[in-house]
Length: 351
Image (cartoon, rainbow, N blue to C red):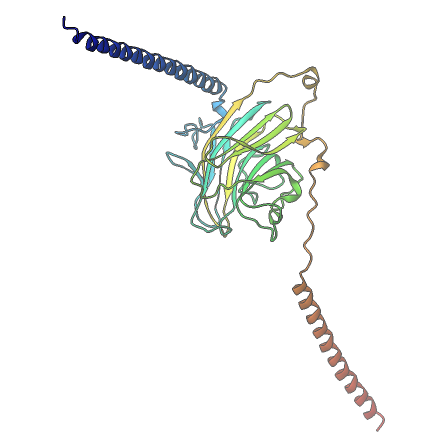
């Protein structure tokens, strides 16, 4: 063999070896990547399967919304303007003076639970020219129209309110839409004109109206503690909105969702309600707790909010003083005229 050919053959052999090693390295990396993806996916699917295993379908509303309607076998009732579509339940349309709701027919008997609410609020009105909002309920009463987002006032149970319109003239400490928690005992009244400030247990601002992202609420109740969280910015992570400890809820209440419009309007769409049962361990003290007959919160005074009446502005004071002075002046002139006529009549009697 020609000696000049040997170096070329050696170089080719080296290239083939490097190529083979490179291919093996790539194959090994791809194998590792495949294993990682499989393990991650398996873990994710396992978590999802485990979560779905605890889904309580009798307390859930999921597409295609079977069990919702007017038949005797339905598990949910429609009320008012609520209508079913393939993709959502429209509680109220973007029209004035509408009320709509859905209510479960099955009493609720879960002690520890988590509710995921998927909804959408949208309409043609500009900011602060829309209303009124929607509410999620777990109450003793059901299927009653009223002024509190389409439900009755002085309710007994839990109300989660998504309020999109500020009724109070001044809201220095919050922006709307605003999500809040209220616990009713049958006597407490929701003050619509003051946006429920005096009975609120906690809340937060959530920019959910006309959002390009899906809107979610997560309501968790466990060990007598209620936690409210929101996911409204498309990041698929929940942020804590309110937490209420020492909250006692009776069993046997009804789950529902309602909405209302007035002079101002919006579409209020409920996409899903997913109720999960939580498995928790209870200590002997919790096991020995007496049955709760009425909803209550331990140390309720800590949540009391004094709603101060707004004083008059400088302009209002000036106008009030001005008209008061003018009124007194007119009364003084009239008094002088009447007194003069009385004196004149008195002199005439002596002629």
